[in-house]
Length: 301
Image (cartoon, rainbow, N blue to C red; front, top):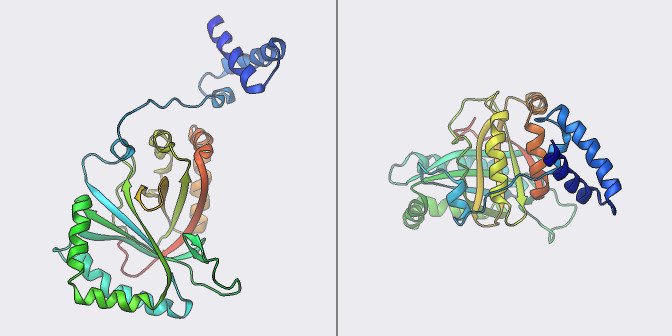
């Protein structure tokens, strides 16, 4: 026990800011006694940050799936309120054709209207608009490109010659106030999004991390995701590659808002979930949550 008590004493003095050995030693001794009662679960364990092994590889190589080469694109469209129904109808008429066309190596993962959350912006505040102007909640589209960047470029080149799609974009542009997109990779330890039957509501939780913390985020969530699988709520987890960087998106599915509340509360009763929250919260610069309702064409219902 002597070596452990010594190391605890040094750490406690640093963390508690004690000027002299007496205050530090007293705090360390008390912490050591508490620690000895429950070596696995004491509060004192939370005083130390998980060590992340230094790696020379790119984050995308370390964190993304190795057996697949999928690239994802997420789109946020802020629609003029008077055009929301027309926008949904136009989208539902055109996008499934691309999804079903085998010449295009892309597929729809999900399409949603925001129900609660980001009501008056599409990623960034529209500060140039009058503050009393009502805006429709953003519509969100998630695409998968099977084959990575080559598949994306193949789609883009083919769409340049697709007259129906060009007309769709022209008509759609008149309905939009703003739009934003990101290219994403999927975390290796998350589920790959698969079509599911409804009705469900979906929660998109977006985390903007401090630069340089993506590996640490991945290390913690690779252990923690097991605590959020019981009700099959985990749909997909992604991190940005192009667009705003160090952004993480977690997509969850629930039967309703009450089910969401119960599922999230159940996670807190599982030993280990609180650790994940403790270690990942300091990595976050900004976070937001939106509740979304699937469009008719969405494979995720």
